[in-house]
Amino acid sequence: MNICVVVGGGVIGLLAAYLSSKTYDKVIVIDGDDKVGGLLSSFQMNGISYDYGTHIPATTGVLEVDEFLFGNEGERNDNFHKFKHLSAENYFNGKWNRTSPLLDARTLSKEDYALGILELLQKKDDTKDERSLEKYLIRNVGETFTKKLYTPVLKKLQGDVDLDDLSTYALKAFGLERIVALTDDVTNKLKEMKRYDDSLGYHSYENGIRNADYLYPKGINGIGQWVKLIVSKLDKSKVEIKTNRTVKKILHADSAITEIVFDNDESLIVDKLIWTIPPILAAKMTDISVKSLPPKFRTHSLFHFEIDLPLLKPIPQYLLCWDQNFLTYRITLYPNITEDRNNTDFINLTVEVISDSYDPNLVDEYSNKVFEELKELEVIHSSSKILNVKNQYLGSGFPVYTKDLLSNASRQSDFIKSKLSNIEFLGRASGSSFFINDLLVDAHKKLS
Image 1: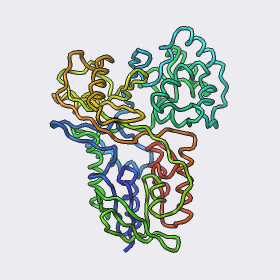
Image 2 (image 1 turned 45 degrees about the horizontal axis):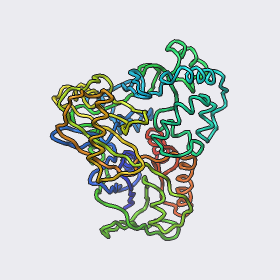
Image 3 (image 1 turned 120 degrees about the vertical axis):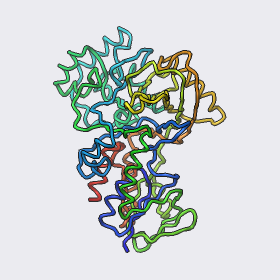
Image 4 (image 1 turned 90 degrees about the vertical axis):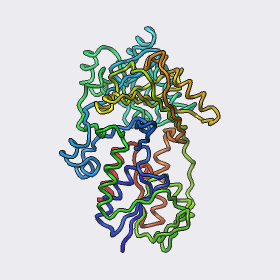
């Protein structure tokens, strides 16, 4: 019997298991948590579902991948709400942009804004291959907008790091590739020229053509319901899921993996190993020496609130706070995500915070501060009270997107593959991308 083991039960690992089940007699998914799905999970508090952050997946354009993840057209209509765009607002420099999540240059002083527009209009179209984020931004939007817009926001998101050390991937990771400036009509006209299309974003999240659909499960059980639908498909195949398991040792001989040993000393004979978690962990468990600096991460915390009064923002599905003066980064407004969530009596939301450190002794202090920020941002009523609250520390959830982050992962995985013939790295472990849809397409290409 040919056995394939997939380490990591996130959506990449689940897709890998499905694709591998067409080739191997048995596929086993291993995950260290008590359930698969990773951050694409939900939990219940007082009968209300909360997600681990804002996760509304989109179709990839690859038929086999999309049908596995979301079903055929009929199944999608039965199981998902479909959106052509997500409704989002953002707060920066003390002001709300109510039609876009993008940084708004018009929040700057008149002097800085005028100088920034002049620099932007004089830009050259030569930013494609620039690895340094600072140099890319200066060429793309000019020195003023780099200093006044991007520098404070990226300090908030990536910590006290020099922009010259960051990769342009940081922009895409946080949805900061373009800015809002000028008027709607002027922007639309300038975006007909590629040199400005790379810099300027539409003034409304409703504009712009997407070939993909955003999908969110019907009902009130949150994004975790999507993972349950995926697992139900795997249950009908040759895939077995083992949770609460971690790999302790990877045994190999003659340049091939032969067996893996778990933390409970259970072992499995392996014909193929698919690895979707950091490649440096595979190196340690195989005793293969890999020279590489460890990546830097920022901590990720979630604050879940059920409140007594309706939201002051009844439209956006999520909010982004780019302002450095606030702990708050991203806010998920559950009643606004779908009609199903809106038709309940529950008023709940989740606030994400990215920071350099996390002190569990100060969690109540953080929680109270975040709740007061929601009032100051006028997301909730000033007299709103907390009915239920849960605070979660998710650990090192956000990488610092240095210029070498992807290349290090790629070098690590390539080196291990040169030593072991029957291992494959997928997801972020492959070093091919940071972004889920790109990684899903890459997994399909490698395994099909």
